[in-house]
Length: 194
Image (cartoon, rainbow, N blue to C red; front, side):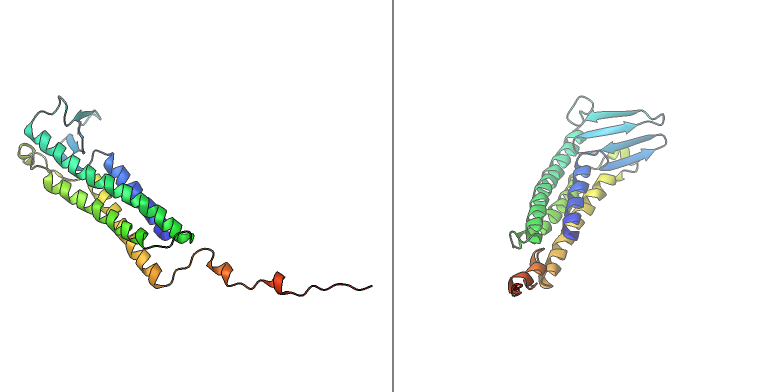
């Protein structure tokens, strides 16, 4: 049950990371920038936020193409990680209920966690060095980057838990019932004689 819960948490964190625009953030005075996979936001001090598409008219520089390429790279890895994590969730669930016993749930948990971490790190490597903003804005990985990393670590944790569950001889939910004696069938029937 812990493995199922952690897998669901990992999927949720990676989903939140995919759809948010706080992968790279920077702030100076009253202006803050947030970059996502396909959009970037500018927030002014008077709570006015403007969102621009990286491939749209609001961003025509060469850096926009590089940021978009980084986003595409990270997005591919994270979507594959989500699909593999959903498969892991199903396989671990089937394993827990004793329907289908296999090690594929453990293997896919490691794979999904590794893909999420690899995708986040590759995004950070491919993300361009924005020289125009580096002096004025201290750009650093934002909230979404760390969510994806935590989701990947949770996936790897699930794989480790599944290894320990297999070594300790984890039983399915039906296992306690199999060892109980069947008292009704073994008891002799007593009839009252008149």
